[in-house]
Amino acid sequence: MKIESDFNDIDALGEDHISSSSETPLRADAFKLSSNEKINIIKDDVKHILETLGLDLNDDSLKGTPNRVAKMFVNEIFGGLDPDKKPSASTFDNKYKYGEMLVEKNITVYSTCEHHLLPIVGRAHIAYISNGTVVGLSKMNRIVDYYAKRPQVQERLTIQIVKELQAVLNTEDVACVIDAKHLCVNSRGIRDIESSTVTSEFGGKFKENETRRELLDYIKLDTQF
Ligand SMILES: Nc1nc2c(ncn2[C@@H]2O[C@H](COP(=O)(O)OP(=O)(O)OP(=O)(O)O)[C@@H](O)[C@H]2O)c(=O)[nH]1
Ligand SMILES: [Zn+2]
Image (cartoon, rainbow, N blue to C red; front, side, top):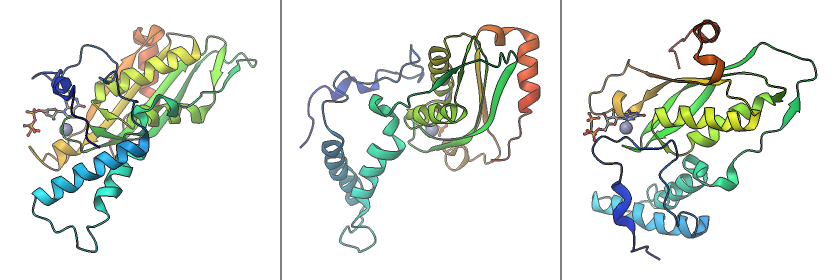
């Protein structure tokens, strides 16, 4: 099966690659097809790319590649496009009246650059100040992983993580800093292997200098991934 219609509006981001909202630009019909239907279509597309490159897909090592890549796109590296996969974040009452900031640092980030479909690899650091609710620690890793498993720009990923935690924790006082390497910069194009990109989103009290400083002191960026 091939989808013919409506695919022409896909480059709506334009030349500057900046989307007007923090939402991932999804089409209205993004979930009309089942995961299996998507895998079958993408399998043919990958086969076509490899054949166009001149590869012989009868080769023992290559013949499973179209199916492997299609499954990886739909179920793994772009699995976070599916809202059904959004982690449910268990929250608890802050019975112990912990009133300082909580920082979860060095959360592994594996994402995919939406401009080149190459990996983004790095660390996210998340902080919040409880407003009466606390969230299970692992849920913060899961939220990072969910939004990372999309075609992304690092700026949007950072904002999406903060917005989700603000909703879960019912407070503006959430921050996220991401330090990541983009393979599209490191391994091709300018091929600068050393550079990494830092993005941050500071909500509520984290906009105040003292609170922000405290967070940055805790995470003391270490760019060894
Ligand atoms: N702002 C932002 N830019 C990104 C991100 N990931 C990749 N890019 C950049 O997106 C840009 C795409 O620019 P283009 O000129 O269309 O692509 P290109 O010809 O492959 O560019 P080069 O990478 O310079 O070879 C590049 O400068 C990438 O470095 C990201 O997360 N945020
Ligand atoms: Zn890129």
